[in-house]
Length: 94
Image (cartoon, rainbow, N blue to C red; front, top):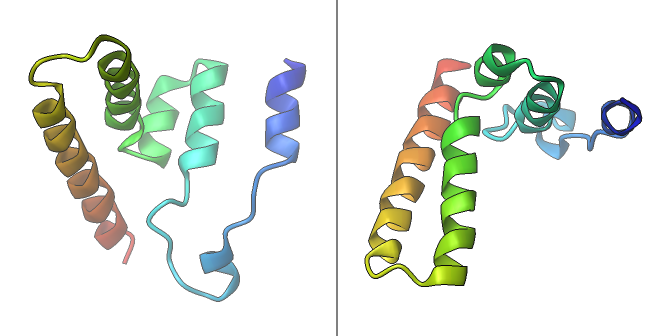
């Protein structure tokens, strides 16, 4: 539990929020902390793209290691999906 407490106490501040603007990435750090605590629903509610981002990064690592034949296409569509989720959530905040 010490690692999670350390993360909670040392979260990075959002430069966008400090100047009064909304941020498309706000909630990502808190979402990771919720995942580490096992609070999967809260992780999704805080940052809806968390699971698709994790899938994309795991797949990227596997693709770099194993060089899948159509891996670049799958990664492209995972990126598009993540961008769409992040932008949709960003505009919902307004």
